[in-house]
Length: 116
Length: 113
Image (cartoon, rainbow over all chains, first blue to last red; front, side, top):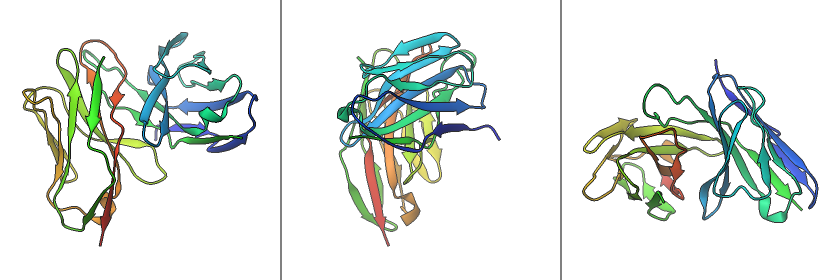
């Protein structure tokens, strides 16, 4: 079965370190997204991609970067981790389909990051 | 910009009670509307959707009707079960163009036996 997997599921790091969260999907979806989930804020969009070599900033992109070198993967990098980036991170993918966006996102199980 | 407002939780109900979670939106044009559910320790999954005014989405006993006149998409279920305990997110996307979903902040539901 097609799926979307995130790794690591849990990570503890120190302030200032570079961290990369991996996201791999086997749906062959063009669209991929990174969200962070925080109490009181719900889900906020960090970065997204509509295809290979395409990346776009979301509403909370500062301190994060992504690259899309193939269809399956969209790694999220924290260049210099800060305590404010302690959160649960979700990767998602979707197929734009034909015509309008169907809107159905397929989510990974999340990566819990703690920055000390 | 586009936005979604949900009622704040947590909501605690007894089993078999009636559930309503309010959701209103602000968007240009005619967005598509969604409810996603997040069970403990999992990612979100689509619960139901509606793509045009007066459409009713339904799944697993949950329903929501797209009300353009009140810009609302309230989630309802006639009789909740303990297994419905989860966080529920309302979301929208513009139907013109390939745009990311905009999510509300989520409403935590706890159902007690």
